[in-house]
Length: 293
Length: 293
Image (cartoon, rainbow over all chains, first blue to last red; front, side, top):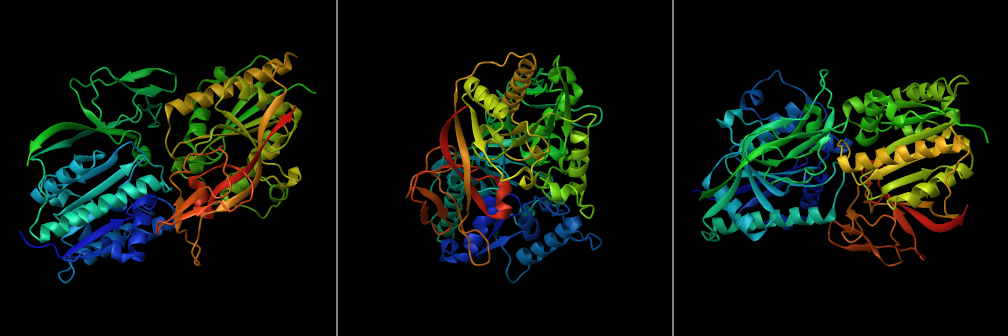
């Protein structure tokens, strides 16, 4: 395996996810914090215009703009589509290609410190296992794509690396505790990569709990598409907990409970994520499994 | 005192404060819930365009558009300025004047169920005392104006009534527990007004704890106006708790603690409210006092 020469830490891909955006500004101001002897680290504020107005995006969700075909399409010219092409140029050009990309996100869901894998590269898996071992708040969610061409995320630009999703936190604010936890996680990742370069990969247990993406669940909706219910009070904040058939998931505005109609146990995440209301999505379902690595 | 003939419940004045906006939609769909024998109740979604895009406002904060001079200025024609004039027409015209206006807001700060008084009308004070007596989550914040002409809020349209500020909740989501608590508070207010009309005002204790507005405190800022710190982890969620001189309030991005430099105890609220970041405001300070009513 080749050495890692350059790491990119990306934040503010969504402009109202302040934890990552302000961490990037901090790292840009104090670069020593992310400097390691064997590689260069760059801190990149991905969507400065959206951050300036405190919104997820200006015209289009930047973290859906990295499909290969879209990056190659000269007719796509919204602010975020141009920004995606610019980020691609910056992080994949031969002279200063990023070997490892870390993309910092936050969520209103109770997801602790979640690592979002978009592939199953052995180094990503080992690093995820290491991080979940040193910090019990770390969970590992895997959202696989049939091919890298179908992956619209920033992390499609590099095989190595992943997104971090921290929460619960409202959009548009900082919470010091979560800010510090995210910062410590970034440092742990950089330290791990440094030891990897030195040929001293920390030993980890040989198993990893993975939450594999299954499907999304919509809110109950009226004919006109508007929602008519909300996350059930007993289900709120139950991310990564087993959801069994007939467990309550929604409470309608006329006070009726809607239960989970599936036939087997699933593990929901992104429960009540603010950004998903515009699509009417209430949660993602995952399958929990233990894998050997 | 005259009878109350018409009550207006206003929500979605800020389009990303979903608790109020969805309660209004629920009340519009099930009007029996807010109907009482002795008065009419109308449910008004105040900023439908901002709600449709899930933002606080489209062009201008609607809850700063109700200064009398602005409502009378024909040159003001942003979406929210026009909306304010329309709401004024609807709620103050002779035929269907609202005698009592309740404006439903939410906050990312840990403010429980806060009543925001903009005047000291005896009925408002008595109702606030009653509500704080039946529910310990209810607090009463008073934000006085020298004259009604200087009050830019929806509630400037009527002497009777107040805003309700519920939290903590992220912008752009519903939390069933807070939704239900807010709903119960609305019902308690309507029931109280019904008994007032019947000449049967519920007896309340004769004292009320009021948190009177003193000032706002900004985040620590750099020369260019950008913030360089966040709410101190020990101070987060401490709304309505005594803040004493030398208590920590901020943690800067280079990990320095900033303490409260005031000379006497104050009671902060709106700590870490998302909507105030655009103004750089970190909290409001209040003075706690017990008054006889």
